[in-house]
Length: 486
Image 1 (cartoon, helix red, strand yellow):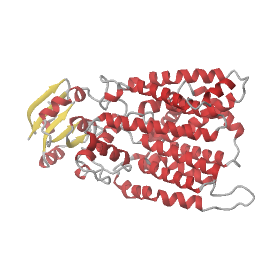
Image 2 (tube, rainbow, N blue to C red):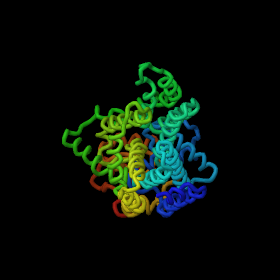
Image 3 (cartoon, one colour):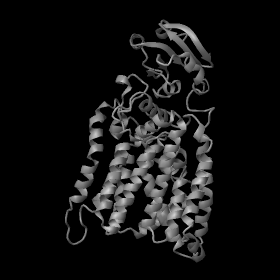
Image 4 (cartoon, rainbow, N blue to C red):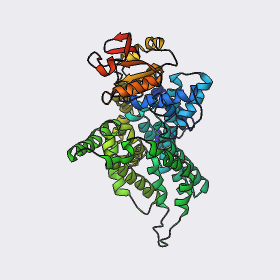
């Protein structure tokens, strides 16, 4: 172990470590950088990518994120503060509309999160080797592996939250107000980009009330973060009312599931999502060991321990509040858990390495070797052109469809629950509908407002509501048909 520490403490080791880790990750994602938006959560990915392209091509005003769906006035739909989309839109304006720019941007965000975990664990452990191993395990979390190159603002929000936590821990160790202010700024950015990261704000409460003999309140740790985060909070206060029927806001208050369904969702996320996607099967034994050691060593008198515990409690409360919305599919809703999960893993590594006689060090070595492989095996199949998550004709025939539909023409899409996937691949604006609730009056109104084409993957020959307005069949392949309409 002493020889290993000598190697780790060499000046050249950090460069070698980051080169190897990043090199493996780039190699694993190499084919993905050139892929179109496909696979798991194409709905959210195409929505994000559409906003990026509309910032680049239509309106660069950061306050006006636009979708291609004209259900919203001029397509403007304000959800999270679109900082990530706007920054990438700026890069598109400089270098052209290339999806690879989006993928590289979010990959860089992931690498900055990787660096943030490296620095954070370095503050939490006396053992120099632990920060290398802990951040390695974070980078090769399967959920990080998958989302690191996808158009998802959650990547940037996670990065900001990790750095907010790093600077807070740094403040607790150094008592420098500058670190506290920087932490609050990073938290503000994390909240603005994705509201659920507001749970990290509870870490400041560890200093709000003194647990020592003074028993005093220090409002500095409540007011400073609040006022710094106020711009993000005001953004959400102004836009939440426009989120039509958005169950995320109402959470369990809009729950339609029975108790057995909710228990099934809870069980799935605890026993499948947690070990399989968030932590990694190869790393999960270390996570369990880390939980044991944290339970044994936790002290509420330790402000760092208390800060992390408050975040953990807040994450669990958030999870339970959004349980019906997270369901068994929205794994990216669980991003706020990731920094804490790998602090737990790092705790296990720290305790194992502190005991030179422990044979568990071979378990650490095995996890280091296996975790990049198991992350790859678990998530690489999510990028499959032949099962893209929507009718594959929209992917393989998109160029032909774009040639048929004039650039400024408005399109009606029938049977796209996402209201973004098909319009994104067509690169056209229009109105998108699910299979149900599409009435003749709605179609007539769309035609009145300029719709000249209708595309669907459903049979139309028995649908008199639509057939009355069909003009010419312009494209047909498998189930996908494109008509001009009158």
